[in-house]
Each structure stands twice: as structure tokens, then as C-alpha cells.
Image (tube, rainbow over all chains, first blue to last red; front, side, top):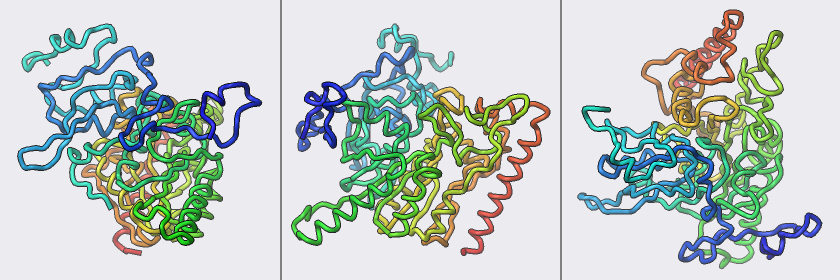
Length: 134
Length: 317
């Protein structure tokens, strides 16, 4: 099996049927350097979504409609003893700033809002609209 | 078959199609792919026809797939997956111990070019031979990867780079081909349509789970709004997919054994097609006074088709 490093030569030395291993260690889900999970598309966006944990109701609409799977999910057990997903944050390496998550957020005051890339996340949380001033 | 009850539980599934791919921001392809591959816990083998998904998810030397994935030509995604399935069957027959405790499912993804036009012969052949696989068509109604040429999925009046609007032309002149009914006519055990809208996530996920667990060739036609070629803002992707269902431009239904048609979602108030058309830049020229007749034609086609579906569901044939 040829690895990409051996293949990265000139066009006439590229081998047929090479395999890109996605995992270094499939048992423990350790992703290899060839996995695009370890690649950054952060420079694509001019605005970033900021996540407000206090307003979130864990409906997971953003998780299901995010095209880049950038919502970090934690598995917790709820009061009835069933497992449920809790959104804990955004992987800014993978986010392209499409704002689909902000569009689908159902809370009265959105728990996800777009801010310019240069605004710090803590600063953005302070500027969050309140009930009187949506 | 994986039980899909609510989104909170479904979101605990570890993603098998990861980010970092280079699809456009707001592209519906990855929403559909994520839901389909998360709809089962079995091992998957995936083949993808050339198109946006293949080009963007496997830019050398990166891969976005956590499952076995093979890239083949434009025309033979279905042929490759049927070959893989036949190989798996043959090996398990020869050697009883081969992958004994594992159930492997086969899925092929193709764009509308790779399904409606170029890959149609291999898809038709694979369904006719009765291999056990799911084929998902990501229908964005043009060849978006190569610059938005028309395909046989492009609806009437749409502006594409090979059917441009202007003084003489009003855009695409042919009707959209009805691929779902063609696949149902092959006698496939399960055929369905789906959209990547947030409101209908369960519809897509259950259809995918059902199709994957069904033995035999199955087909899902999923509408995939394309921000670049349909010309709308990235955040409106789910909204446009939703409008396509609410206006009955893309009705959600499933057909079992090529006969039993069931409409899975009925809009409460059917919206006029203008709502759907006015959101997209590719149809903006239809709102000029001289092109009004195309919108009327659109409405007539949509009403006729919706009427046909309802009658067919009632008749149960």
C-alpha cells in the first residue's frame, strides 16, 4: 500500500490504486493526518457563529443541518434515564460560516448568532440581545 | 434497522462523514450524506460517482470519510457497488468465517448527472440484477461541479450556462425527467424521495434506515439545493428545501415493490410556486411580463403531478 508521501512526487510516478487510511488507530478512533478532520477551512469565513450555552435548549437542529459537522456533541443521560446529545461548542477549524445553524435555531432569542471574525467570543456573549431588545 | 425516535438520541451517533471537506458553505450534499450514513450502525461500503461530492470529499491527500469509500468514474457508481456486493457475497459463501460477525451494507452516491444521464445504464443494470444496495441521488438539477451545465434534471425555465436566459431564450426548455417513477418501474423494493430540510430530518433519516435495511436494490432521490448555481444565500438552503415540499414542487413519497405509493408528508396549505421560484436567482427572469406564461406552466405541471400522486395513493396500484 502506497502512502501519500511516497506518491507525492511527479505525475508519472503516481501509483494506481493507492489507499488513504482515514484512521491511525481504528479501535480508538484516532484519525490520521490524511483525514480532512485535521485540515482547517477556517480561512473561508468572514463571519463566525457564536454559541450561547445558557439559551440553548438542546434541540440539536443545528447538529443535523450543519453541512460541516462542526458541532461538538457530548452524550449525557437525562432525567428519564435516556441518553441525549448536549451541544458543547463549535469546532472553528471546520466551520465555513454558512449561517445555516443560525437560521434553524428555534429559541425566541437565538442561541447562535453570527459575529465578525475579529470579535472575541467572550466579547460577543456580552453583546448578546436581551429579551427587551431582540 | 436502526430505531430513530427523536433528534436528541439521533445526535448521539458519532459522525461518519467528517467536516474539512471543500464543499461550498451551505451545501446540502453533506447534510444528506451525513444523515444517510448516520442512519445505520452497520459497517458501510460507499462508492461515489464523479461530481461535487467526490471531488470535494477526497482532495488529495485528504479524505473526509470514516467508512470504506471508493472513487469510480462518472458512469459506474452503481456498477462498482454491485461488484463490491457480489465479491462480499462470494467470499462469505466460500469461507464461512469471512467477516462472520459483521454486517456490511452498500451505499452508492451520485449527483443528478451521474444518475439521470451518464450513470443511468449502470444503475438500471444493477437494479435489474437485484444487488443489495442503496443508491442515493443528490439532485441539484445541473452539473454544478463543471460550471452549471444543464442536465435532464433541470426544470423548465431555469438559467444554466448551456441554457442561458436572454432576449431570445427563456432558459431550459425541457421538462425534468421523473427518475423516481422510472426506478419504481424497475420493480425495486423501495424507492423514495427526500429533502435535507431541518423540518423533515426524520423523514430522510427513516427513509435511509428503511432503504439500507431492505434487502434488494433501493433508491432515494434527494433534492439538494445548490447555493452556487441556484443563486441564493448559503443560509437559505434548508428554507428552500422546505419550500420545495410546501409548494409540492418536490413532493415527499415512497413506493414499495414498485406499486404501493404512500405520500409521507402533505402540506397543510399548498403554497403557490412563485414562493419557491422567487427565492432563486436562476428563475429571476421568469418574473418579467413576457415570461409570465412559464410560471403558469410550472403551476399547472406541479398541480397535475400532485393530483396524480394523490390519485395513485388512493387507488393503491
